Length: 181
Ligand SMILES: [Zn+2]
Image (cartoon, rainbow, N blue to C red; front, top):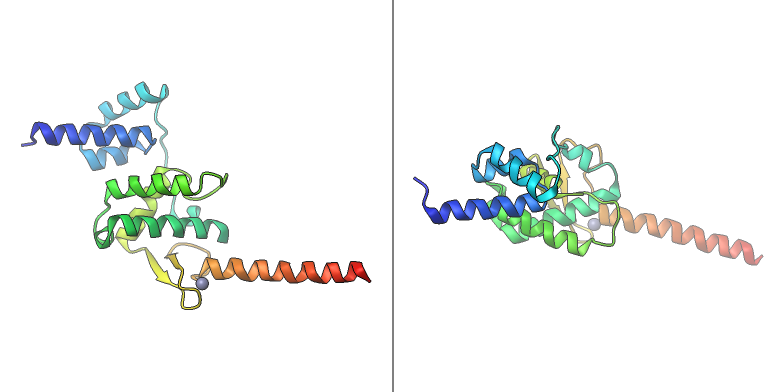
C-alpha cells in the first residue's frame, strides 16, 4: 500500500520530469503513475502532446569526438552525483540533478549530446547495463565513457582534441612563416 507522502513524492517527481520533457514511458517507469495521467499533465504543461518514437541509441549519441567529450562530461557528473550505485540502478533523481548541472555548464554550446533529459537517461541506462563504462586516461587522467555500440575508437576524447589543436596550431605557424617569406 502506498502512503499519501509516497503518492505526493511520486507526483512531484513526475511533474519535475515532465517540465524537463522526459519521454512519458520513462516517467511512468520511475513513478508508476498511469501513462494516461502523465500524458494529460504533459499536454497541460507544454500545450502539446508528448513526443513518441524510438529512444536514441548510444551510437546516435556519439556521432563524433566532440560529442564524446560532452557525453563523457555528463557521465562523470552523473557518476559523481549518484555515487557507485548508479552502476546497479538508474537513479532518476541523480539523472535529473546531473542533467541540470550539465545544462548550466554547457549552456553556451549550441549543438551537443546529450541534447535533452531523455538522452541523458539513455546514458544512465547504458551505465547501469554496463554497455557503457567509465575509463580513466593514463596520459591526462580525464574520465571518459566507452560505449560498446559506438563506432568511435575507445580512446580518450580530450587527448584526441589536444592532438587536433596541436596539429592545427603547427600548421598555422607554418602558414605564418610562409607568409613572412
Ligand atoms: Zn587523455
